[in-house]
Image (cartoon, rainbow, N blue to C red; front, side, top):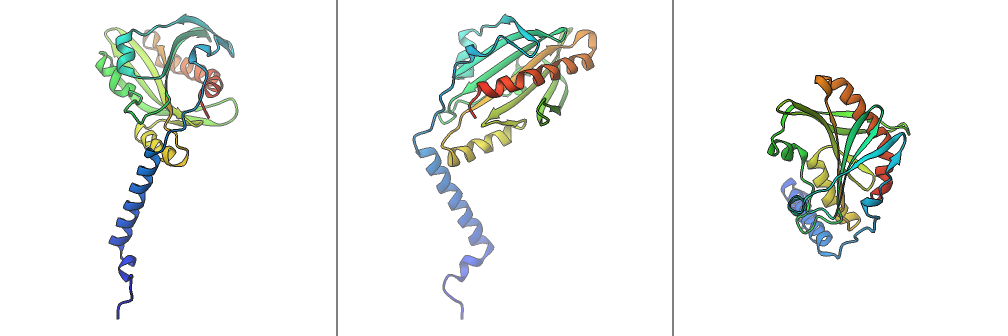
Length: 218
């Protein structure tokens, strides 16, 4: 004779139960008033660090800012190691109202840049750890650039935008936060020398990452 609630041991019931639990957790996480972190404006980001110094302070037009919908933006060019590196950071305090980073993977082709190389590379940091970042080599006319970018939140560096979105849900449930940042570095590829560009970009990441980590909320 079947015992009461035996149906709960079936795989179908377990899957349905798990789905209901996840749905309830998501509803709970996104219905609470969000814990928005307090951070200093990116304009206070250091102009000099680890042998690199500010060469140019960039400005974004209002139309671009309206599309980006970030809460704070930094766009600067630094000089060091015999070359220039452009640093772009877009910080989002919350993603609950539809604000979210725009992937360079989609934005670059829309601006006329044609990708030649698309992969992910590990970069060893001065403290002995390593981060995995996206790497693109793009071309527009005779100009070629090397692009490194990643998503950063809660001291995590994430290359995959899908993994980053999954963390948004997890962080909303666990910490009641959905803040994140897109970090992008661009260097020019001189005379087709992608190796030199790659070395310069990685040198900049190694120097800048500790400062970026301090500038963004943990």
